[in-house]
Amino acid sequence: MKCRVCREPAVIDIRRHNANFCSDHFLRLVRDQTTKAIDEFQMIRPGERVLVAVSGGKDSLALWDVLNELGYEADGLYIGLGIGGYSDRSGEMTRAFAADRGLTLHEVDLRAEYDTDVPTAAKATRRVPCSACGMSKRHLFDQAALDGGYDAVATGHNLDDEAAVLFGNTLRWQTEYLARQLPVLPARPGFPRKIKPLVRLGEREMAAYCVLRGIDYIVEECPMAVGNKHLGYKEALNAIEATSPGSKHDFYFGFLARAAERFRDAAPAALESGDLATCERCGSPSTSEVCAFCRLIERSAGHEPVTLTRKGKPL
Amino acid sequence: MKVNLRNPTRTIEVEGPMSIVALLRRLDLNRESVLVIRDGTLVPGDALLEDNAEVEIRPVISGGST
Ligand code: SF4
Ligand SMILES: [Zn+2]
Ligand SMILES: [Zn+2]
Image 1 (cartoon, chains in turn green, orange):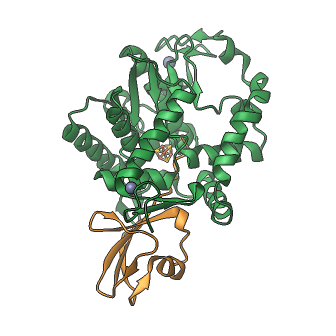
Image 2 (cartoon, rainbow over the protein chains, first blue to last red):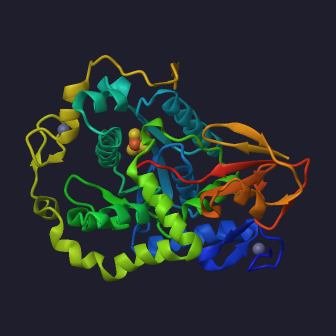
């Protein structure tokens, strides 16, 4: 196996590019693909400040690293979700990463600041944990970005993530989600711009980037993710990819180029026009008097914390 | 050879020498979903692993829905 660029021994093959790369040229490919996505979708303009949503996982730490390598002004925000030992360990890895590189890391801790956590809030509101978690993260990232004067919130969603979400939304023709599944969501009153600079890169490439850059990330899975549909969609797409490399890319970028536009009218009208009320608790834009996040907190704060265990041992 | 697997963390013994492709096939793993790591760097797919080798096979698929 030889590097496509320099013919030196390669360390990784990327089948959808039908090419192998040495370490240096692979790292360059990751930076180039990130730049290409940023430029193509006008994600960041010169002089803008970016807030990176960091979880301690491979994608978000790699994204933070790449943006800094590319010279962007990018700070991190880590949210303490209170998911047992998993959250403790991912927080430690994120802090170590930031400290090693001298990067600015902000933190919000659900337990310390709102007297709840994801497992407890999910139980108290009978929501699926990932739904309570995702909604809380979106709310807290938006708020932190606006408070901190950031122009955009960047998340580590990669090609596999986007293809899997698209697959799920298409299976059920969830047109209102399809309307909003874009690599950039422009800023609206009360919401910062949302950008996904890793959409041109696969999940395996992001893990490889971390290994080659010596980034220590959390490899263990969030215990709440077990058995969720998203993983099944990824496996299904990877089975197709194995016999037909490039399928995930074609599926997602074909959607952006030829289909996304057709769903635009399906986006909820209030969101599109920015015609929203203001949450009376936190001041965020909301479709009701009290926003979904504040209702979640109201219904779960002070509840007996849920302890996560497996085979009788705390996780 | 020693093969370290993750999620959950465990170690298995596989008789070498063996190519990466054969090892992954033996373990019924899709090459799209894992990386093979040795001494902190990636092992290319065409490498031959000696019987005294120690490698990590790391899954790269994560399941968070947001
Ligand atoms: S897997 Fe679900 S609960 Fe865990 S961090 Fe991701 S969204 Fe939150
Ligand atoms: Zn090279
Ligand atoms: Zn609110």
